[in-house]
Image 1 (cartoon, rainbow, N blue to C red):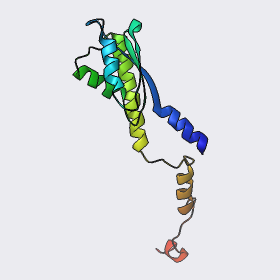
Image 2 (cartoon, rainbow, N blue to C red):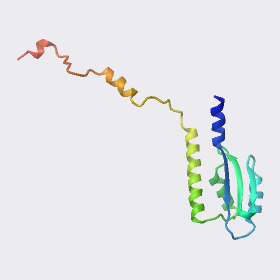
Image 3 (cartoon, rainbow, N blue to C red):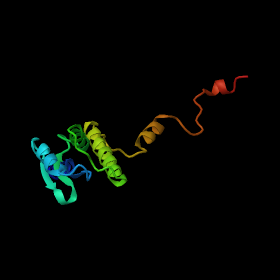
Image 4 (cartoon, one colour):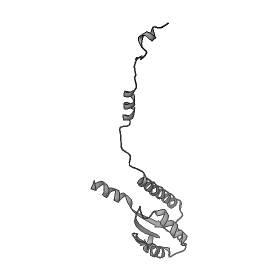
Length: 138
């Protein structure tokens, strides 16, 4: 059971990059300082790429929350089409993973097992449970 828990932990650890707009300049050092104040959040500024690398556990942070906080503080994120699509996909995936963590684990069965059991309980074929004297009654 230990290998599945480490795999699950690895799936919950995320490493993302938050891209910033060209203007105003100097956002990366300020944003990385802002994010570095948070507990359990790995922050690595990349001034040359206008981005901040972040590492976090999905149970504590989401990329959407981090970006929303930065925007609320006045930072401007990169709004190119590719960046918007990438962010939307990451937000969807993380939201789905969090939703699935709350969902109860289902037992896996063969898909036809319920139908087989139900079929065995019902009479089938050319059986007629009517007594013979009632069948010949006219």
